Image 1 (cartoon, one colour):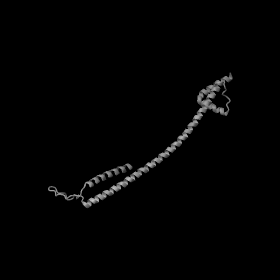
Image 2: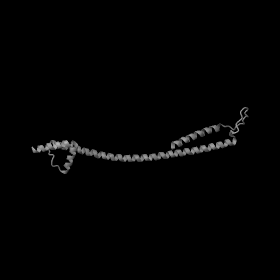
Image 3: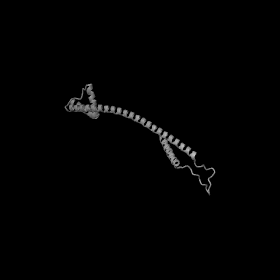
Image 4: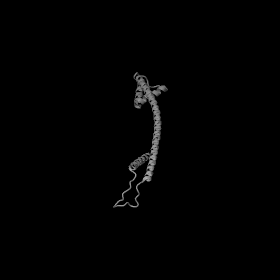
Length: 170
């Protein structure tokens, strides 16, 4: 819609400029010599004379004024459109910043949990290598066992438990 208005506005401006050039170059008409061979058709409009020229000039000035007003309105509409778009973008950026802050907090919590799991894994591995029994966990130790299983896999944990059970029997 705005591009059509801009296009029409520029076309009107060019047409008015061409009219202005034509009117500016017109001098008060000199009496026309009577054509000898080809008379003017009867329905042909007469060329502008003094009063007609003044009317055309006044009409041109009015069109220029209207064109200037339209240009001012278009600039105002473009400015309003840009301001509205800027406000929307600012709001979108604020929402994205908040989301990024939340994601950063979650990432930091995951890193802490990962560090804690690594330390627990290292402690469990060292305890297993030292020959500590895997049975008889307290509830918090059962949680550590679940973490251990998630790290090494269920099959390896079951094999380790079977191996430890055999060691206890023997």
